[in-house]
Amino acid sequence: MSRLGGWLVLGLTILVTVAVTFPAVKSVDVLAGLGFFSLAIGFAFQDILENTLAGVLLLFRQPFRSGDQIEVQERSGTVEAITIRETRIRTFNGKLILIPNRDVYKSAIRVQTHFELRRLSFEVGIAYENDPAEATRVTVAALNGVERVATEPRPEALVSELGSSTVQIEARFWTSPRQLDALGVLADSIVAVKAALDAAGIELPADIVVLQAAPSFRAAVKGDAALTPGGAVRLEPDPHRDAGAGTGELIDGRIRS
Image (cartoon, rainbow, N blue to C red):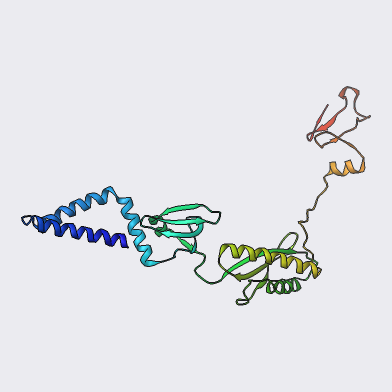
């Protein structure tokens, strides 16, 4: 804003100086020439002017401020500054990204630090033999004991899905919206919930895989038949077969002699 004000004052000063130094020059002619010159400048520097206008609108609208953590155009980080041309974002892994103001103004912006609290969640799977109601109570009690987890709104634990191997429970809680704080609290919460479920005797099983034995597998286990390298059952010679037919074996599902 100070730069824009300085340019405006400079332009007015030049107009007054020309009018005083050259009395024969009419102000209307000067303004007309400036209007044509401004039009040419506008076409030549359309990109810069568009970014400048978008930057001014961002300053007036203030959807975010310096120091806020935002996500815009799939880029997340902390806002370092809003200049005339671009918005500077420091990513969470320490990189600087410059986004043109027009792209910021036209895009959807997720301001992560706008509110004081942010909700996080994670899922944990328990065995079907355990009581889901008890598991949710243990999970909530564990979350209440984690430092920096907000007491209001209170933590929650809800049954979210009946999976193939486990009953899925979603643990939800509120904490600081800052990225580093949120990641630390999430890690502490997962550790606390696992320890509490283990102490309560609630099993957290791995995925259960059911194997269905094929005929060739059963034959190999029982030793009733030999297998080809491809896994097919090798047929023994048939003593009743014609002597001219020869012996045969099953390869890839087909009998070849």
